[in-house]
Image 1 (cartoon, rainbow, N blue to C red):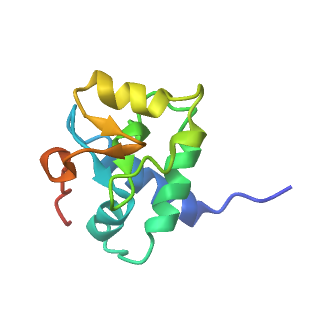
Image 2 (tube, rainbow, N blue to C red):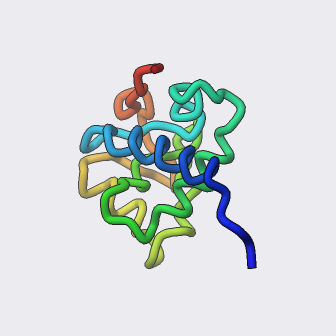
Length: 112
């Protein structure tokens, strides 16, 4: 059995705090969140945080995509296309698991 790492728990909570700020109908990237936290090289860890958030209703993990707008986290959502459905219900256009016109929908978190 793995032990909990309080540093990871704190990092994950900081990631979730930023994810909660993503406006409806907008997306950001794992790397943008990492940069905002001052940990530029931790985009993968941001992804782990998003994957761990799926049992939480207060974290809009569907609004976090990779730097190219690909729905790389979609297999962590229940259902076949839940991530895409959630984004499309917010007006985000997606074709072939990728956001169309990413620049239009991209939200850059403010660096703290």
